[in-house]
Length: 340
Image (cartoon, rainbow, N blue to C red; front, side, top):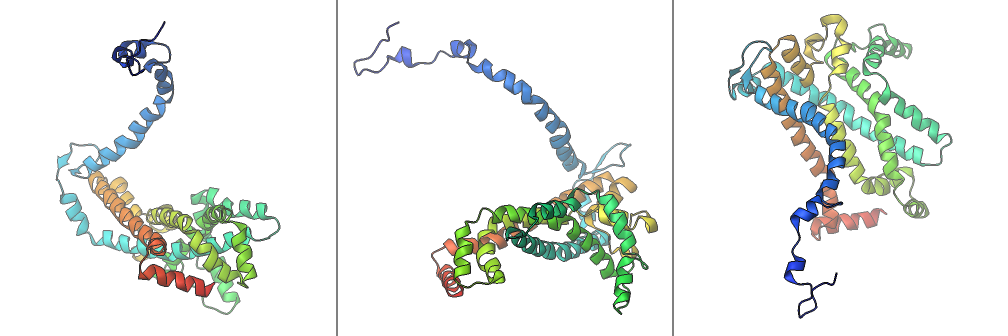
């Protein structure tokens, strides 16, 4: 059928106006989107039931006093007020931060060094990658039971110390022994995983940069800190954020490690292994204070959000200084050129 054109050669107004009814019912119209939407709808249904609803319900529950069986009693913000006055909660916050610092900083450094070594010309690189990833897929409960025997008073760790003339350490009885033993377990579990993340970022760096550093006479440490680290900032930021999120949710290590002494509810002697999530679990599922536990969960979410922002500012702030045409950026560029 011939198309009616206006004087300028464009289709007439009636021809340009879309026919909504014919477009929605014609083959290839809106109905063609229905089968794909139905195909993926189970995911969204499951996500709404098991993802969105628990989050929304926990926020509602944080304003209620509920033991899980009886009627709920609305208490408003009193749950958060009680939580802020809870000395055990603040002790668990301090323990969590100390364990997080003892584990995250050495873990990221060791992971970076391991990734740099794997990126070099090392034989059997594939076998090393598999070996480093094995702790991450090992059962955490089984791993904690094994480490519990290693850190026992007459275990392998103290036997090794006595073999070289040192006194044994109360790994499961003293304050810093407890925190160190939990930190060592976290390092052992996550250092290989982060090394593989760093290795993927290293392989994206052009080889010309390493060759230029080698021609300029840079040794391995200079290459690591002046070539690798500046170009791995996005990857380091990702590893730091994920490590922060995981580090502030420590639970299984403390719960299983001290299970033989107090059924894992108090975090060991002096509550030095009590973490935020362990205290949440104790209040919600041992003492049936579900509203109190929900309030603790949302406060933990706020803490993680704040630390994620701090990590992002620390890791990406220096990168913005390099791009900023200010004095700090110029000094940094000058220092980089002099150190090259």
